Image (cartoon, rainbow, N blue to C red; front, side):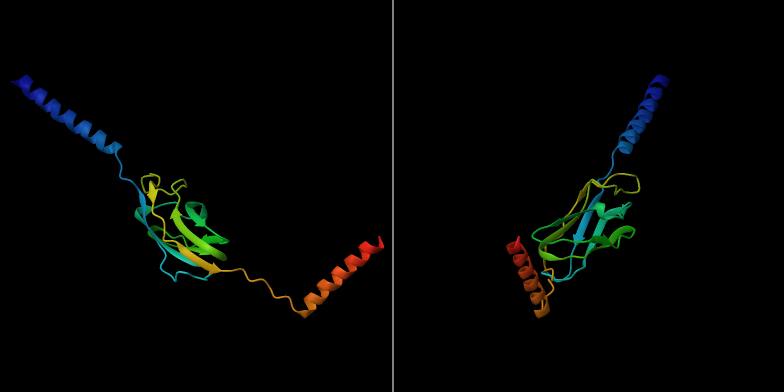
Length: 162
């Protein structure tokens, strides 16, 4: 009877040890669950703000390398700013010009992690933002045209003399 109780106690202890080891090895996926653009679409703004949310507190989400910015057409940007801490962020894409589209996601290959040091497993991607912000070319006035024609005439004369 004593041997039976010892085996029972030992099996209970072994069960708890194995269960604890198994649970300690498992982790919940860490994800970016929302990337939202709520401005006018299409837009001609030079700054494009996005709301970014994680399913738990995010660490090291603090630089443009943490983003996946996809641009089509002639769309380009000069940088990103506005990173704060916690689970919810406002990220602003700066210096947006061109005609085309832009989407935003969080990179799963950057150093973004949760409080346990787990890397980001996945990220949603924003809606497609249609950009209509062409780069303005300065107008050439009559004086500029005159200088251009004069330069062209000098070039032609110099070629003829040689």
